[in-house]
Length: 539
Image 1 (cartoon, one colour):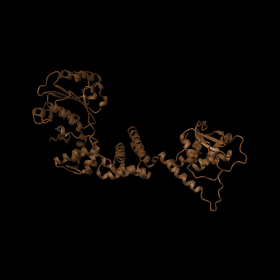
Image 2 (tube, rainbow, N blue to C red):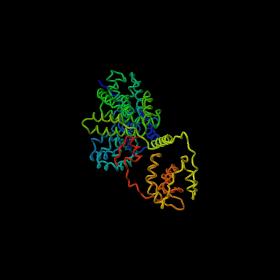
Image 3 (tube, rainbow, N blue to C red):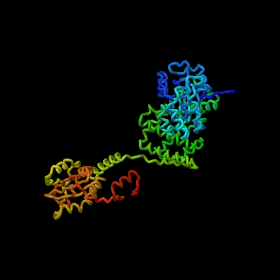
Image 4 (tube, rainbow, N blue to C red):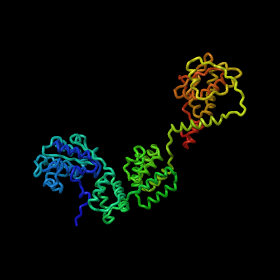
């Protein structure tokens, strides 16, 4: 009893039948039609995507006696001989087992002789990257200047291991991984032609499990049909492929939102009961997280996923930020590495699920600052309620600025005018020294109403000069100057309470470094971060 597996029975017989490689088929077909064929081709790409099949199609098209618009006819003696693997002029070499210089020397000697049956000799070298350096060197000159009757097709899954001197002598075609949708469509055509009953869900499972390989998908399909007794049903595909259900991946991601450690252990127990390999689950979880990222960035319409699960992907994308997904991917990638090296892979999977349950969402600094501004505004409003029996305010004593910058500073003040300061009974003999001595205390008092602004003013600015009733305060950076202008009334009131009546002029200028790089837990900014992020001070 002879049975031909689907992967061989349904091997493409025309360039137009290649699955997922339109760029390759179009280029080679145009070359055949125009008579513009190279003597050496390099086909690179993952397994099972059509590299060797394309090389055989090219050999048939070159030797076909009656080609049809570049495509081989499939019925002439040359086409039949190559398709059946009995052509003397089409030589296939497995470089993994014939990788030495002696084998390449034999090839080089045989190239010189004319073809016996066909129009040309075609050498197909599979897994060419396995050749030794000496063998590559022996092949160089032949690839560069072969006889007119000789063509070479080099196939590899690791093009980076092929010397550049070899690649430069070939036309290179990079075969891409075939999408799950393309594989599903291909399987549907085959099952319809074979008159085999199938479920669409089964084809989804097989296409995902194949991971871009058409040959793998046909091999899995053969297993499913044999297992189910001539059908391809969803549950049978799950049993044979050992694929993790998508809903389990969604449960793992949901742990981030719920923070339920018990649910993480329940999910682990379910995976163990199903016999799921920890590494398979983690690899699948990585792909699942990438789909969520694609759904977030590109929209679910462009997602290569089953239609019934697209709303779930959209919901998951709405719950997670970009930074969250990236960190979860880093967790999963690290866990995959640990599983490969560890003797207890299930423990690594349990740890990963617990990390998902204990995951803390990313917080953007910009959003924190907005929240702080809102909190500051609310506290300021609450701390200054209007008095029930207000006392008429004393008129402010006018202190005209002596510079244009002082006038602009006054206009830039964002807070409403407050009560005048209580002036010292005796102004200090050296107002500048008094202002410098009280600067830190002034900034700390401002920080009570303005949160982290006080610290920025404290270390970003310093009283610089005092001339003709004008106290100039320098700030090292524009951000510090803008921060001071935002609380100018408070700053003016506090300074005048120390030095007496004066005009406060804020300018960019040199400021002595007084921070010393010290940060303490008493700092308002540190306290804010500890409360918001549950952080602790390390350094």
